[in-house]
Image (cartoon, rainbow, N blue to C red):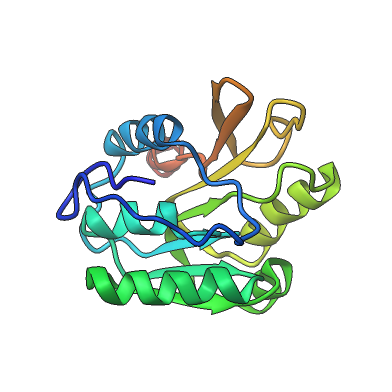
Length: 191
């Protein structure tokens, strides 16, 4: 895997072979960050990376100046690799070993960007539960964005706060954000 932009641009990282991961491809990652560049200045963004695996997405955010970044994964090997790599690269990343669903149920922190890359074979209901927990527990800042990576066979465009989706081969990024109702509320006040 390669860091595409920022202070570690071009840096290649090699994860241990035995980690149970399916990293986001460099092409998909580059496309994702091209989209996010239109919405965010990364410096100082508070980011949550769920099912973080090798930490590929966390490092990209960190290299671009985001932080603090929280990376959550259920595998000790993944968490240890992220901790070591974050230290080596001097990035503001905290790696936590936790079941993602339990983490979302207990978390009291809100984030500017939440990225979730669950295993593609996770059931439809579990994908939906991730989105529900994030919005029900108010884990996303009002101007924030949730991105869920999933296979083209999983349909998530019916979920609350769905904004748009981008397809890349067999992978899809679904984007969720709060609808802006500032214009409507201003009109109501004038009446």
